[in-house]
Image 1 (tube, rainbow, N blue to C red):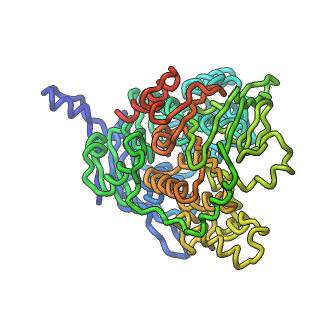
Image 2: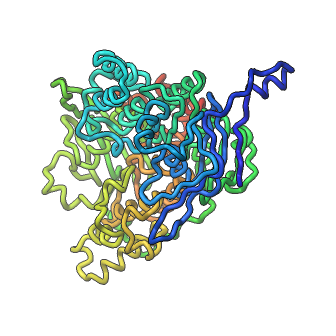
Image 3: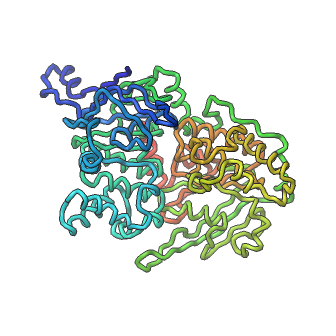
Length: 571
């Protein structure tokens, strides 16, 4: 049995100073021999093996590892939400004096929220799409009998403000679909922390957040920790782990392969797998270097035909001039999401757009894709009018620009297998012979490093990395000149992210692709981009060479972003 005991720092300090610590308290969370499996066809397949740790009040233990390592299943098992068909066993699983192995579902409903706050990664799925987020947070308070109606409403605004939601009174009236991914995630965090739980389970709580809001949320979790709350942090972002965790458990294949104090594990890892995770983190020092030890796929030479799509094109492949976009808010007022944005994207280059949630970067991407019509300004694609012409005239160029989103699962039809998804993306007019279309599908899979074994698999049965590779293959189906990547790697764990970034580098080199890369992750932007736009409140506040901007920023806001990143990296 792997046993990890989070150190009692008060006792350590007492031993160093020779003083006597206060009487040792029992751990808030005690786990011994936790094993989780799933029953399929009468057979139980274990996914977490014999896990043990103690978590005192006021401490944070981080669980890190690749997708499928068992870390999220562990977190869900701790709150009785392991899922359908789950078989959970433990020698001991206790929250204070409560034996969690004997808790009924009715008792769990009383524990969750009040004693245990659970922050999930996917806010769009976790929040009710038909209900304003303020009402959802208020409902969590009401169900546990907290305060009067007016007190609950004031508490909701205080909570939204505490997690960095701007204009909380306005945002509280909006539904999840009206908020950016970062604002949705902050609303979900506010809901989980509403009742000041003593144990916080945070499963990738900062995945959709830019570095400044990450720092704010981590400071909030750190404040709760200093007030005595305990935190179980699930994260693929090792800088986040370094900022908050006292101890780290590294999981692989359901087993703990390394464990210990955070400083020791992250600065002097003993296990090769931990060292591999650390080497995969992108940043200034990784520019031009392969991040993953796994060789990226070799792009089939026949795919070079996509280079012919650039024939006769001089100048930038994508250019925007003076873009403006306004939206009407729920209260009837109009807000400006994009204000005077201009850029040039050259062939075979990467333009990174970085900024906080709500800065206008995703709206800029949608205008570039002609999915939004600007109120002013113009976009040209391959030297031809793009945003200023009707869709009927854009149709001939539509295949020359493709997009890869953050969450491919929501953009796939769950009833379609991989083969049908890709066949649908391959234009019948380019491949009228069904055999040629199927050969093109296999070629696309080869370009992204997938084999034919995934053809008959459905999106829900693919790993996160496999789904994102299928999404990239789908985007490549029309042999585009430009790929718009909107937070395309932000939801991936660090090792899978490294593989996808390596793949993007190879595809760009071999196919001459140009990337418009939208991200809140400055490390990823620094690793991949040639030039950078920094956006705030819909305006470009700084632009230029990526290395110059991210090492010697001139604008105060850019300096704040870089400072926040360095604060996380140096934690």
